Image (tube, rainbow, N blue to C red; front, top):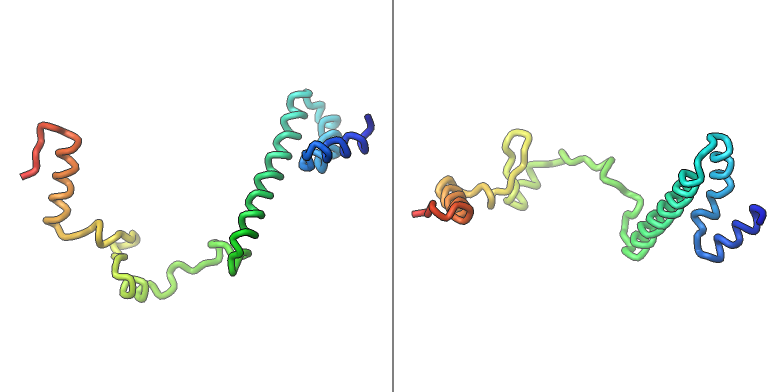
Amino acid sequence: MNLVEITRALTTLRLSGIAQAVEGRILQAQAEKLAPLDFLSALVNDELTRRSDGFIQRRLKQGAFRDAGKTLDGFDFDFNMLMVTRKRGFLVMDGEKFESSAARGSAGCRRKVEERSASRWSPGLRAS
């Protein structure tokens, strides 16, 4: 079999990730004198990468997101933080850390929650 026939056979077997990378991987294997197992491993890894990328692209397309190209890298998390805390009322700024005010609660409430969870884990200890 020559390279064209191998590519056609891989495409027929629905292994297009391997079909796209086989020529480059053959050259790499010859240049680096890769063992057959390493060569096969690289080809399988190429196919897995192509499939996972295709899966993510399909999900993004099906999701029909308004701003599909945007990422969180460019988002300004510090923008108007006071408005966020006032509007939602559940974020409490404690230095650099944000914490839920529901989890924070009052001191008495927190103590009872801690006692309750302690009694769950150690049967000899009971909350009063």
